[in-house]
Each structure stands twice: as structure tokens, then as C-alpha cells.
Image 1 (cartoon, rainbow, N blue to C red):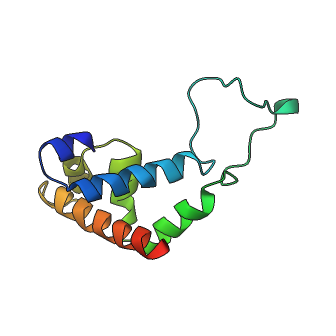
Image 2 (image 1 turned 90 degrees about the horizontal axis):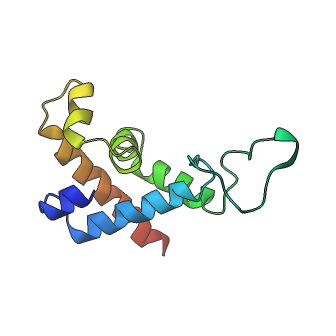
Image 3 (image 1 turned 135 degrees about the horizontal axis):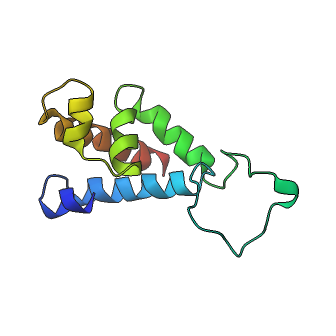
Length: 117
């Protein structure tokens, strides 16, 4: 997302909303860390239950607010770090539609976050 902000392809507000969305996802229990943790361990080889993190509700509400049409671009670009243009190509759309779709999704996300305050 920093790349899009530096190129002025997204606004500062859209960038901040994307950062908040990433934080909600990371703290929702769905993010799997690539390294170990010195925090509380899980005994008996059990894995933590996905979706039981402290921000699960905020993440779920944000996905629902953005909707089934726009949420995939958020997940692939904001959470997955993929390029918006590649998202568009994968969905058989012109490459330029990727950033437009991302902006629409970020606007919907921002509207949700401002309503939720």
C-alpha cells in the first residue's frame, strides 16, 4: 500500500483505512506468524482457533460492509501484498481496473470505519 500512497494512487485516508484493516486481520486470529513467539504457548500440539483473536469482530464487520464483490481485492492487495493490476488480470479485467476497484473498496471500507466510531 505504501507504493500506491507514494505514487498518489490512493489518498492518505484510504491508506490509513487499509492499515487499520490489516491490523484488524492480523489481530483477528486468522494471521499465521512465520516465526515462533515467546508469548503464551499452546499445550498438547493444539493450534489456536482461527477467528478467536481480539479483533475478529472488527475484521468480520469490515469484510461484510465492503461486500462480496469488493472484498477480494482488499484481501489480495491489502492483506496479501499483491498488486492491484495483477488482481485485475487474474479476474480477466483490464490491468487499469485494479487500482480503480481497490479505491472503491477502500472508500467502502473507510465509510464503514467512520460509521463504526
